[in-house]
Length: 136
Ligand code: HEM
Image (cartoon, rainbow, N blue to C red):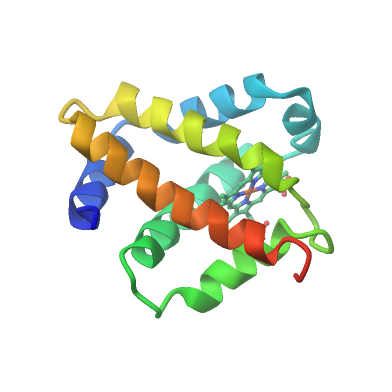
């Protein structure tokens, strides 16, 4: 089982860098034109804040806590077929890779093991979203 406490610690270090979330979005939007189009008109200060909280919820969920299940469902439903920002599950690989790259750039104490633990946590999140895609 991955060390999700260590991932939370790494996330804390990343957040000290104000460029962490904006640099993640820069990478994400550059990966696919469909993604770029989805964010036309987005108010970035709010969006950055929403993701900051979203990642925190996702890491808590990945660690096995059920108290955030309602919040996870809400986020997944926003991105489901019937949600206001539907995301084709095939695009989630870009979300994971962009976030891992941003972590690499921002956490000076990242190790290969910690990177794998991050990957596991993010995959749990996107698997959950994928599972709810057609339900939402
Ligand atoms: C390729 C993957 C993803 C894409 C393309 C994407 C795209 C979007 C878009 C277009 C919005 C609406 C922005 C706006 O209001 O202008 C949004 C909102 C949001 N996304 Fe994502 N998203 C992705 C993955 C995720 C994941 C995995 C999470 C979980 C941490 C997440 C969390 C959120 C949150 C919390 C909001 C704000 C929800 C709200 O407005 O109520 N997103 N996303």
